[in-house]
Length: 557
Image 1 (cartoon, rainbow, N blue to C red):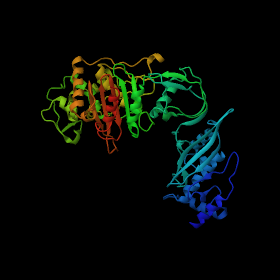
Image 2: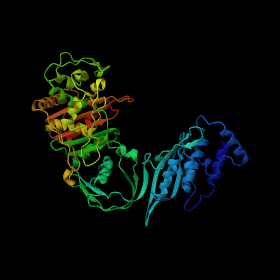
Image 3: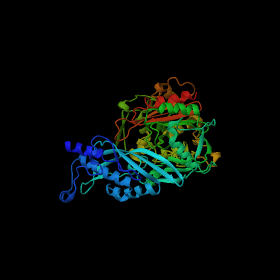
Image 4: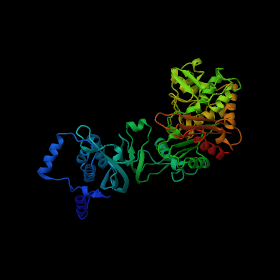
């Protein structure tokens, strides 16, 4: 230990190099001893002999502090000096590292890089970046924090930086790159329905939505592009529907204007409901038109409200119930089986806490969210019945919604046997998000499907999706009564207490492999306002997502 402190003391007295490429600035106890000048790493014939001997046997076991610090130091020093080959050689994926680091200087036009390493924690080494982004006569400072992790390379066990694009910048995913130049899309000024500007300062969770609006309408809204440093998404990110992201504006363009359907009071209420809840998402719609009045995501990252793909659990029973009623397999006031268990397709299904309802009606089963009441009808159904109902009546699973920004439009695949039975209760292959489930409640309230939209179709002349048919008046009346009864006396009653007027609701809990707690769902309407939400790993929907949705319904009243 004493020799390391001595090396650290010698390092601190060495003058820093001044100019375009400075020596790596080292911070944190214990790290300074392994600076670019070598520390105790050793030089000369003796060190080379030891190195050659070590190569004869692959290294294994936990990384030492010296291995972590020297590997990280070598990588950061080479990167800072502009030695992309040297930096890449310090990683476990030289080709990918060399390409991204070369683009960092060439395509992103980042120069005068200073890297400051922090205190290692195991194999992880945080570091900060300060640099300049220059494009022609325009330049701007750049500063951010990142981190790298040192691992043993497969094969020889040598310590190397575990390469991922996020090492270069935390906003990067593998396959993405950084580019500085004329903005791909001119900036847009997004407005709410009352004409006020929408900003992330006012509505923190709308960052990804504003990025999507720019991507969609930047070249149509009359603006001119500026110069910016941005993340350009690769194939994998685009497959996940991630949008390009602006990191730094060197010069501002002239923004165009895009008006949205967002209601400022409801949006503020939605933001408040997800604040501090990283896994919560909510959406509110005007049922009679499909206008999106509010959306918010806790954590302010991925737009789960619009693009999430999650099993909706028992909220899907709204769609299933409409199908069973249409097929005369259920009627709200008639007796309907709700046993503790029901086996189908080789699976044994059960209700929450293994409850049963003896001699109960379908209304009672719906209100209490009895799984077996729905799955018991599976033997009487065709494999594609639920898929057709979702598409033809509720406009889901058609992949043709044109909301104004990227969305996932729900998925109800044709399945058979046990998976088909599970789909009836929102498990199996069924996938939804709050936008989809808010639309389900809106369809029940309005009597027909109205495709949700955030930007009016008149802005760019796009066509909205339609459903091929509507429910019969009798089916619709029963479905509304089922949801109304559930809001008053069923699993949604506690959350909906105090929500007055013409209301309906349905709760849901979706089991997910690897999660201790299910995802909690809630969908409901009040008058012409429909809303839905999910709290991932939250537990029962009535207790987690329910209060968020109920708060929006109250705010809209």
